Image 1 (cartoon, rainbow, N blue to C red):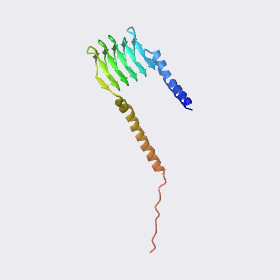
Image 2: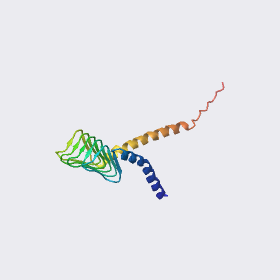
Image 3: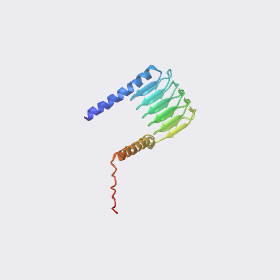
Image 4: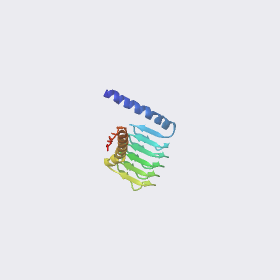
Length: 170
């Protein structure tokens, strides 16, 4: 039974993520799962999304770069016109690289050469505690709201005892 569950989960994830991968392939967007993305100096791509892998930028990205459970390395002379986000990984900018938007690393660190430029804000929430706070706390809060709603509905379905009235005879 556990093997069937693992196959079911893998099949469901594949069925959900394949349309996104096909849409990314039709565009200049790049989406990879479990396989690093390497953007060569000749490449000019739009948005880049990497899940459980890393992104190596040597060319130009005209959109955003997002790595979930992976790192982003922007090498010398590379540029990103949008934001750079690394969740559960590090962000590294080498000398002469440019990020026009914000640079965010949650659960990882930011290593930036002094000659690298960032047009927006730089935010680094290093450590696994931030990943816990960013993702798990909202889920627990939502679970508490659902538990409250279930409790209220369940409470209203219980029969309310009707008090017995006694009449006095005079």
